[in-house]
Length: 152
Image (cartoon, rainbow, N blue to C red; front, top):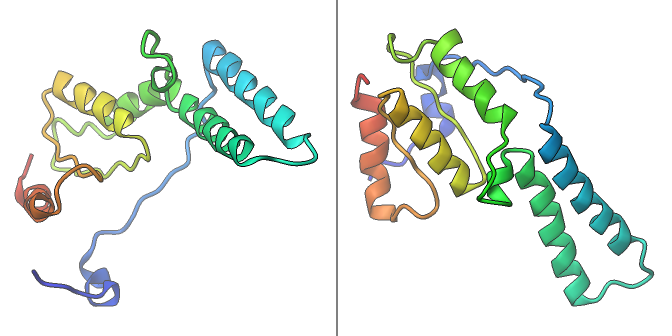
C-alpha cells in the first residue's frame, strides 16, 4: 500500500466543483421532522437529563437529520425525497453522466441512502463503486482503483 500526503497529490487532482442546491422538504418530511423537533424540545426543556434522555436525544437528532434525506430512512413504507429527485436530475439531466466521462463522488452518512442512490444509478445503467464503512478494508483499495481506472 502506498501512502501519500494530501499536499503531494493535490496538484494532480481535478478542480473540486461544489454547489449548494437548496431543496424544500416534502409535506411528509416536514411533518416527521416537526415531530422529532417536538420530542427534542421536550427533552431539552428538562432540568436534568438522564443517560436514557441523552440517548433518546441523540436518536431524535439523528432521525431529524435522516428524514431530510428521505422519509424511507425513518419509515420504509414511504419514500418522499425531493433531495434524491433533485440529485437524479443533476446527475442525468444537467451533468449527463451517462453520455460523458465525468465522475462524481457522492457522500452520505447513511448507508440506506447509498442503497437508494445505487438503485437509481442501476436504473439508468450507470456504473458506480460504493465505499462505506461496511466494506472490508481489504477490498477498499480495489474499489478505489476501479473508480479511478474504469472509464464508465
